[in-house]
Length: 351
Length: 119
Image 1: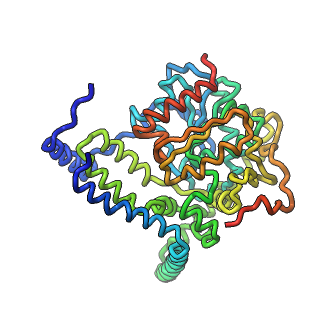
Image 2: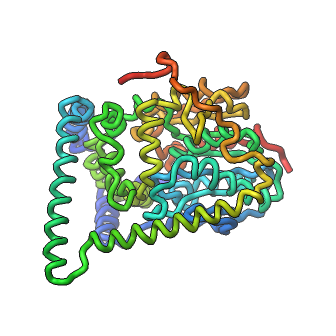
Image 3: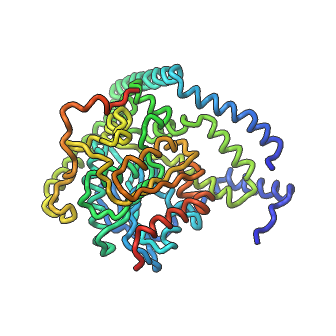
């Protein structure tokens, strides 16, 4: 049975204690604690396999992380970790993430990831897990990469594909997208001398989507400062949200031209390599998961994906949460994860 | 039940949030932001060039020198990666002999105008 909430005086004492710890920087939570092994690496791409003694489902699951943030959001805190949850449910979880790019990665293109790194990582995964196929999950911009991969490489043994908080209609992506779409800004206006889009430019772009959010978050923090669980979650998410990474200029130029200006994903046809790929060529079972209150990838941007892929087995999961509601927070634990688990289990075999 | 101070904050914040979110989507704000970004870049460039000249006058290394070196090292690393790529394709059983991007369709010379969306 849950203990009753503390009284007014007790709250003030807890608030003072947690406030002092916060000011002293003493209550930074430990993140990304799930044990894992690096099983493959190429340039800045890393493939991790999470340790588990309870693998019950086949094929293994590969989560492809975004290029615009750090992957520990998927394994934020013990007990609320998305990866920890999937492991506990019996899935064999792999994560493909990216070391923050440096100038050597500035000329990377979408093709570098879609035609080179991800297929190579899939090869390494199949060998490591001794599997013939895999389930693919893409988070945020990682979803864009997995969509392009599934459309461009039907020869890859992808049994099913799930995308989470993945942008599609870039007309709905808000201020920064509109700046490029209306040609007020060119991609090169935000690319620095090293060929990268600096992390602070992305951070400012995300913050501009909700100008009052910064103050509101601090007010929420103060109001709940007495609550240890809230403070831990808040600090972890706030730290992650500010821990942005640079973005390769080559991919950014293509994103502006192909995805923002031509709105290629929404049109269903995206320039790729010397040709183009079509979302209709994605034939594997598909789940489009997106969040109602997402300000980074608004629901209106993700929603069209459901009808754009060519699969006969298409599902949609619409959540009442924000961008990270899939992977962290109460909404994730209560609603998102069980539904994601059900879909994954329904498209896997018990071993 | 939220405390009174919170209710007061929300009463102010909500209309302010709605207004500011609408304002940043307006043409006026986007024009202002564009000019601001361009002016910032121009000013930064001029300050950096001035500092570089001054540092070189005294025989010091400037940020631009370090950047040039960084970019040269990056270029070397890219060339190494290209060499590795050239050496590798023979050993890719996963793609069943297909070259990467094998399923891409040739791009038509001109896309039908109905497919294009204008802002």
